[in-house]
Image (cartoon, one colour):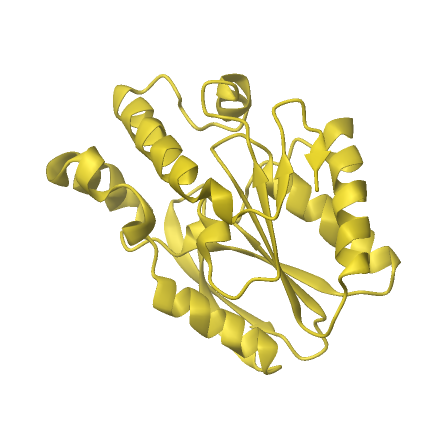
Length: 210
């Protein structure tokens, strides 16, 4: 996402080092990694540090943020959720999975690929084009990323939205908005429903469990 705020701490670096070593152990052509976690858990920070770590090993890892692939536009999403019922619509069905899988296929076949990219300042959707030729790994970062089929390594950060309230506030996520709390609770339930798909977990103390 454009203008996203990264708050990288030592815990992200320490966890990223362990996960990077596991990625290197499983290294193969066109490896895919997914990183999931609730709002404020540090998905983007962990993704960024892992990608930078891999670059030191001569590996080009491209992050894609699949929270860009919502069915509804950012400026319309809150009203749409409230109108249709948060408990009815918030969850896995909000992602455009067909477009996500098209991008993954473009990566695996070294093609150029276009994808949506949310500008967090204007809340508009821009179009990002990237060339996957020469990209060794794909890191799929997003709330429900570990639900993606065919991914080699799936990482779940187990912090819940209750435990990341300060991080959400620091990143401008407005956790005190009543609708936002309802959304966070439904997202929490959805993440819990897919947590067993993770092959690596980062626990509440940010310790990596392989």
